[in-house]
Length: 161
Image 1 (spheres, one colour):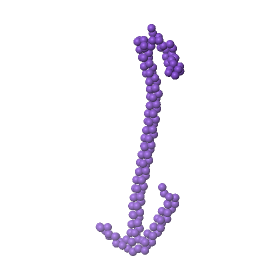
Image 2: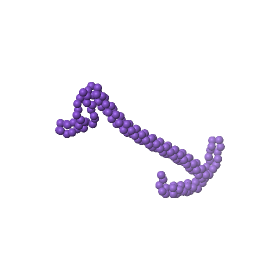
Image 3: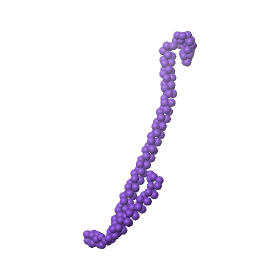
Image 4: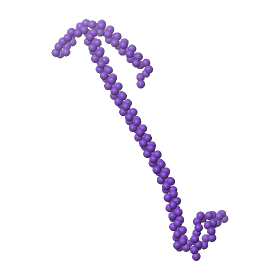
């Protein structure tokens, strides 16, 4: 980004250079013989100097313009790449959130499945007790533990003879 006032500085510098070149051309106003190989021409040295300066200025303008276009193109490509990177990052974040939600959902589904499997396992044990008669005479669902506390076993046992 250009500094504020740098345009004025360039304009003043260009004006000073133009004045110096004009003074140089006027001081060297004699005629010169210019040879193009197939033809020779007698021309004022002032005109040769001014044409040379003009051609040089045009070449510098073209080079500066080319560099400016290249810089603009590079800047646009960098901006596009940054946008693509930002979009990719957002996409990855969305995918990560989606995966987290899926994992949380699976976890919440797995917990009831595990509970169902535990109940099924208990049911199998209870059925074995019914078939084999291993649980012969419990008096109630409440038992005493070693400390004398009452413990509810949470199921009704079948009394078999």
